[in-house]
Each structure stands twice: as C-alpha cells, then as structure tokens.
Image: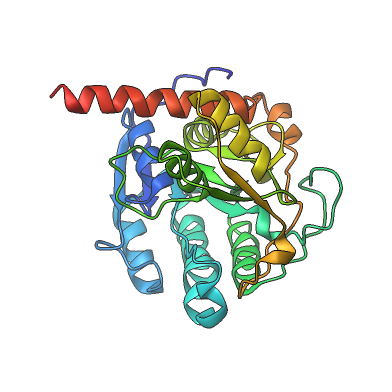
Length: 301
C-alpha cells in the first residue's frame, strides 16, 4: 500500500464504537494522535443530546463512526433499533461534526445493492436495498454525507479478528474455525463477495484523512472477488488443510432478511485517490500469519 503522509501530532480523533472489531483497530492505528474513544458503555449514540455534548466537549478534528447494528436478520424484527443506530445516530454525529467543524468518516455496506449485477458495483451505481438492515445503512449514508467533507466507506465481509477477540465473529472466522477443526463446512457457491481486511480498511481510512481526499462515497474493499466456496478453498490451501466443503446455493437457505447474491465492489475510486488495495488473497495470508504470531506471543508471556 501507499504510505500515508505524516499526520499532525495535535489532531484530535473522536471514535464512536471503539470496542468493536473495526473500532478497536482504528483506535490502535491512530495511537500517534489524541484519541477520544467511546464505547457503548460511555456513549449512547442513539441519544442525540449525548452525542452533541460528547463531540462538543472533545472538540475533535475528525469523527470516525464505527458503530453499527449488524444483526442483518434481527433487523427484520427490530427495525426501530436498526434505524436508531444505523441511521439516526449517524445523523446526530453528522450534525455534531458540522457544528464543530470536524470531518466525519462513516462505514457502510455492500448490502445497499440488490445483488443482481454481473460486474463489481461502483460508487455511481444506484443502490436498491432489499432488507431493513440494508435500508437503515443506506439512510445512514445519506445522513453522513450531509456533513461538510464527510466520507462514507463501504466495506463488506469484514475480517481480521485474532483468537482473543471476544466480540461477534464474522463469516471468515466461521470458515476458519470449521477448517481448523476438520469439520464439514457449508459454503455458498453462488454468493460473490469482495472481502475487506480490517488492517487494510484502517490503512485506507488513514490515507484518505491524511491526504485530505475528496469527500463522498468510497468502496473500501480488498481487490478482487470470489464466491464463498472459492474463499474457503483458498483459505484451506493457505492453511495446508484438506477441506471438507458442502457447497450450497442461496435458494437452499431461507433467512428473514434477503442477502444480495452478487455483491462484489469495485475499488477504483480509492485507487484514484492514491491507494491501491491489495488482493483479498494477500490480505487473507497476512491475517492468518498475524493470528499465528499473536498466538506465539501470547503463549510465550
């Protein structure tokens, strides 16, 4: 990846959702700056007044929002909760950013598309959400972009947790656990994704902020795309494991919320901003290596 320019030491960064998978990585990546990190315990982002007071008190130069209601199926039964976090909390942060002159960074999702495409979606493609979760995230995008200079980074199939991570684990973690335990693993053979490695998303975030990139939407995913079956095969190859895969199609699984079948994202706009994202296979290799390194270091303590 391209190296970011040297940041100002006096920059204050306000992070909401600092205990989540992405939020924790953001806090660590910005440790050369003054970080005001808020978790669910210290800031209820659905409380507009609390958000405005917290931001006004912090006087940040940047606000990075890593909060999200990520229970895709649960959102169908709890739409008010999904919109409270994914949309209206973003509106509060956007208004607080405008009031304080801070630059807002918000993360969204590939789910805003309907999945009927045959080539990777670009930022200029029209969204068409097919679930409550997707609609709440799209609404959050609109609110975020009301703030002057705001950037919305769409990520998908986020991965990058270590073995000690205690939060909610994603699809990549499930695949890895199944392969390592030599279990039969069910994988979609017809759902296409562009995985996003947490470390690369963080690097992209810093690059865009440090280079004062243009505001607006960015697809922040690793380069390339694959079906979940292909991802599992590559993971098994890198691990040196003979996989026991059970390929299935989306039509064979009934879920409360509709998933987009084809949700690959093109990251050319990010490249035009000076950052070429590594292929997802490279990111996968770095994640697996980092996990091994962390385990060795923990066991040696």
